[in-house]
Image (cartoon, rainbow, N blue to C red; front, side, top):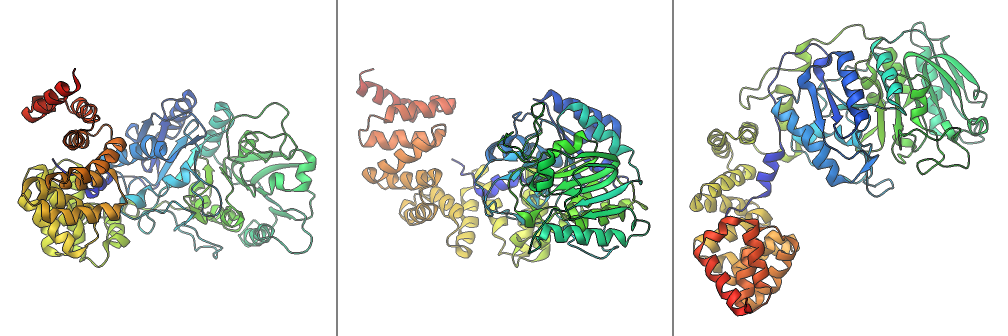
Length: 605
């Protein structure tokens, strides 16, 4: 039996790319994600594709639940994994700068709340997909610092987004209460204006000033320093602006957290095409379902779990780009107005401006709008700035190779060895086993400490039943990492099953079992080793737990049948039938047929 290690699982997920020609930050750099299960998603996606002339190959069609919220397993299997697969099959990791989600793609990943919580927006989690591809570990608890966050920097300190320095994607969403409103959002993004004013609506505060109001003051000052904007920005911290504002190119307020806005029930806004807006509101992007007629934020009547303002209202009133939150982000994580507007006015596009102003990823923020909207962009990037030359060793894009080499998972492994390992992973993901094996072997020659290379070669050796090669590679791993659970487990199984080495294997299997705290597949190895040593009574309770946890695993069920039969446990026959159902080829084995006959005779069937 081949033991599939964690390395192989990781290799199957990793995706790599080769550079393709692309115009600077154009439709070529956008991936559009459509949820085929949602008619609204299909309509919005198709409209945007036509409007922006997105290449047909730059469209991925998912089958995801049509709901605001999904659990993390569903997010990974229905959203993240298909997108990762698309990136791999289209060799597009460096070429794609922007991922655009459409109305009908889930908004939120469920989890626990709080400053170290695991709730996150789908959008903010997807931004880290590039980083995951490099092999970096992503911690789920709490927010992760956004590497593109600019903080309040002097004008000119902001740079267009590429993967040269930033191992993330910029993810935006085309959403609103209705499809018609979303189409309006798209139309405005494709024909933005440079006209209009910016209104920064603070709230009345007595005593200590909040960070939010301080940021609005800094934003007004920064905008005023931009040529031609001194008389086009209005700051109000006196609570007077709950009436009508028109000709808006920018707007920021406290929304329903402002008593004046609460009292007014709503704010009447008129935006020019290309306008950006956001609010200091905890859950304004909790849903884009249309609220009941007459519902107003800040009143006692709740909608979608709270009475707070909705980002969708800004879309309804004509905004082109907006940011909101799917759950409580805490003020420190809010979009910084003192970065957002200066960044946009200085030439960054919609996506760049919002992400430059976003302190954290893997958190609660959603950005609405067409990422290519850029009314103040003066000079496009040269294509070479988006995609660098192929690395001669990895034969993969230079930016990706750069991030891969800099990944903390590399440790102190030699650069050339790590690059060869990367090349092997890429080849393996495409089914080119022979070439991948050669790359892994060259990598381990370049640096014998490369555990990942030895593990990959051990897995390949097992796949071709070369037990001696697999054992030799696994021994190298255990010598360097005595607590490597996967290596301990695989080495124990190979020694016990194929080399008559159950006595040596027992120590390894027992250690793996203890370190893993009873992971079922590890427990199976331990129980089978005990069985081969004749210790059936010790093996039985362990294999029972493993079989219960892995009812569809044919190998575990077969082991359970053999061990339970040895201790006259009535569950042996059920385990055997489960094994034969999961792997029909077992019906052809003489030992399986013999055991089944004996168990049936004993049961009187």
